[in-house]
Length: 212
Length: 212
Image (spheres, chains in turn blue, green):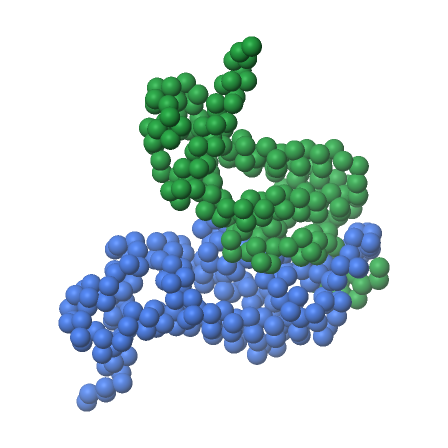
């Protein structure tokens, strides 16, 4: 009845849980693989059969962190819905997940941030992929006439800048009280209504925009 | 010839300089008043004649940090210029000052942030005053028809949220590469052109806004 792949996956999951628990207990990510081995009742040599370095462990932990966010983004990019709603949900749905994680355990959340800093090469791939999904949605908006006069790269960077408080997990502790879905909706609408090349802005009388 | 007030001010300034130097040398704000006394060649008792606690010293250091920013805000609120430009300069001129300080000495800058955290009651007054100046400018914009359907408090909070990367000194290290004046100009224009009550947004066809 033995199913080796499943056993390996289960043991890896158990090790990751133990690492989470250790981070929670200690309030820091600075444990060694030897500490971790002891906490799961393994010899270090045995632990290394499952994760051949702390980097490999961090990579697996990052994978778990991003898995749920990936699913959200993939679903949205493929979804049939107005691009305005798609852009809003792209940030809103991930905001809900990240906020829940933060509220569930702020110390573990901060520790994951720290883990990310120490293994940025791992995180980078996920960040780039999120940017790629965002680019698809923004390009769709541009096809519909938004962001007039701006290049996609510029739009990407400006949108990223303005939604920082809603998408940067590092700002969560500081910004959580203002980064609500209701405010995100207004920010996304502001961006869609107002973001365009410099030349066109401030020349318009605001009265021009009010008719709805 | 002795001018006691001036002497006291000069000695206080010298003590603040020594505290800055100590922070730079140590890379941390965790010095004691006894350490500081030694570094300026004073007895602790004598040091306490000038600052009766580390809190009092922190307050004076915060005062120096904010003095230049205060002048900018006061000048702008009183200035005769279009409100669009006023709002832009309100953030742009302070961004320039804060960026220069960060570039001048990132470690000292970070230490000042830490000092601010530890003495938040001191910082709070300055933050509230900056909010007050911003409210004056945003109210002026509202009189001219901007931010239709929104309350001043809501506008304040939304603008603050969207300009975080340009005004929150804590984000400076992370955001400096994107928080340029050129991008700030576009963000401010986006806010002026696009920020209004929920109902009016996304219903407009973007084409409506393009005519300039």
